[in-house]
Image (spheres, rainbow, N blue to C red):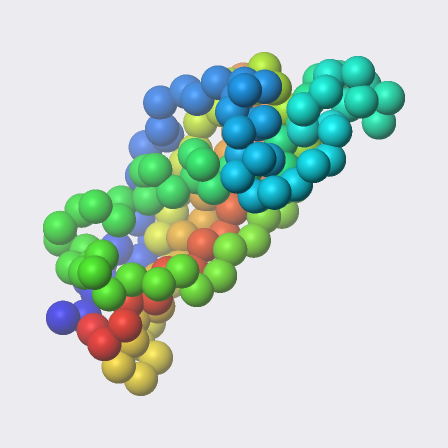
Length: 145
């Protein structure tokens, strides 16, 4: 079944605040196999010009898709047929330990590509004070829709 085009342009309320911790940053860096010390060692991060440990560039995926409306059954998304098509981030500044962030997502595109459905989600990742850290762009493909 085709994805519901009424979701194009739909924005979702901000997520609950998420505190970015040194532990979560280290666990994420371990999971992706990146040994960079600025993800683990506060002094190494400070020597590199950061106030604290910084998160790897793909870390915002941990929080950015949580409120994109993908679970809304009216969207008609069949999770069993979903593959991750693309992901990218545009940064204003690095995410770092101590940041408390929320994410606001908007479905910006839904279109058919052959027998597949393409869904694009833009997410603003901001501090609770309103400072934009990055924008996340995610493309999800539902195969054989």
